[in-house]
Image (cartoon, rainbow, N blue to C red; front, side):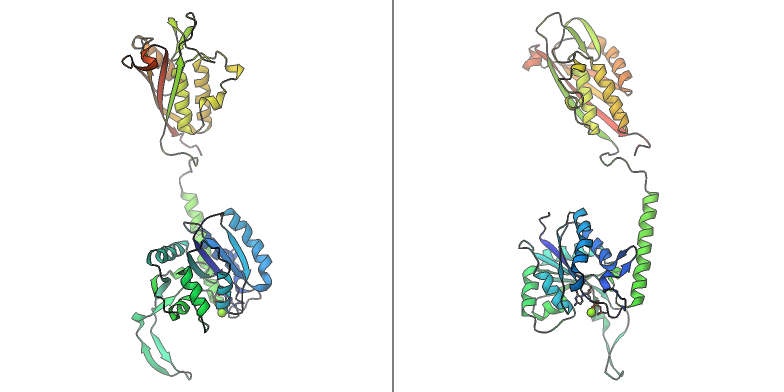
Length: 411
Ligand code: CTP
Ligand code: MG
């Protein structure tokens, strides 16, 4: 579905012995979801959709696959679910085996850290791409740390300024992680240790307190509270947000329309232009009355509103519009804009041609068009110094610009 070069392996195959819940830890309820579901939301919230591997408890793979499929499809993310192993390290290795060829950066994340924000994933991925080595999010250690022997005697105080508590997601260039896993002799508690043991540099970037690991029941309680607070904050923000404008709208929109009509062959064809009849002037050819000014205004308005164009809206061959006057199209266009929640700011139209002389009837035309449009319409005219078809008097061009706004209160 996507062509991402970043993958996230979410390890969720642990049993959660210390949590003591009958369900494997990743499937323990959290809010109206599961720990894994909340963790997955953070992954799917990344700025650029990654390829996702979920490593599930071996006896729950089908169920997890089913739960994940809908979310992944909604987010248009490629996601695979595989069975995990007996240790975390084995589970990561099984996830690594699922990566498609194009993946260059791999993030490994504990499902047990469901509230790690999407931004941490983005930062870790970006740092791996920029620096080309391992990146782990870490938090400064705030408590005094002491080395203690097996009988509970303090041996020494450790300098905590040199310590950081590691979190996930941890990110690596793919080949670094793969070769470190291939070479790993011992069992490590995190991927950074495994990669560092392979001699590859690993940098720490700032972690996030919310990325804490759910290990014992009090952690689950804390996660429940944080999630409830987060959801309440989102709901409050939605309530207090200004009423949403249509997705396609902006505070102001502008549109341009151009129409060209040739003068009719028959000299007695009446001329209709800018909604007015021009006695004694040769008319324009066209399926309708050929009122280039009215048509250009329609196109400018429709374009500004994203409603297409006059041909698409009225059908150039539709017998109902045979010979129809420009104001029929204009009135209908204005109605459609109003229906879609738009208000017209103003329209400016310029006629390019040698005839008719517009100036004497400019005010008349502007008054008529302003009445139909329901907003100021200004009409200007120019010639082209004898150049082109307009200069030779073969036809007329009209160019219109329209400004529109969302009508107050439209949603
Ligand atoms: N994990 C895994 N496969 C394993 C063991 C652990 O995928 N064989 C995952 C867990 O699901 C968790 C992460 O590694 O998301 C961190 O492990 P931990 O917090 O220790 O989880 P559990 O091993 O499930 O918990 P416990 O150690 O209390 O049994
Ligand atoms: Mg464990």
